[in-house]
Image (cartoon, rainbow, N blue to C red):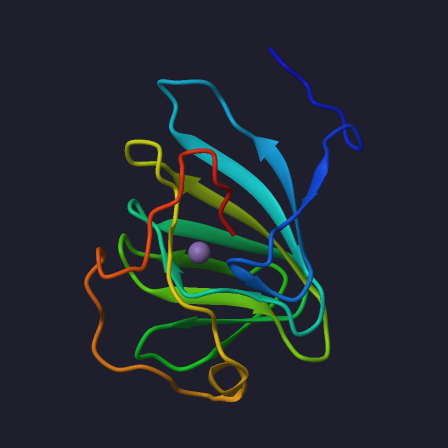
Length: 155
Ligand code: MN
């Protein structure tokens, strides 16, 4: 058994490549192989959000505090609040983050496929962020600019 005490886990500032604004990530759990799951707590300052992205095995978010928005490509922007549980199916292009006026913290649960937890795409523009509906038909999972190395975190 391993106990990682509260306050002992580092909080990483996410690089601006795949995020807009200030986003911190705390790694809650990363069990060794053959487990493939990773559990993170992600905190977004007001106005901050992920870039568009997809997860090869999907992703579950559990909102723990604040107020946020989440959106899949081609769908409406959705309000997410503490206690809400959100599921993105494998390959679904989406983003998540804080609202303009409030911060957001959610727990993220995701599994990797051959070391890849997330496939990053383009940034969410200010116009997209402010819009209630964006995008069109669902894109192909592989239609992204690049794959990141296996150590890359996810939102
Ligand atoms: Mn995601």
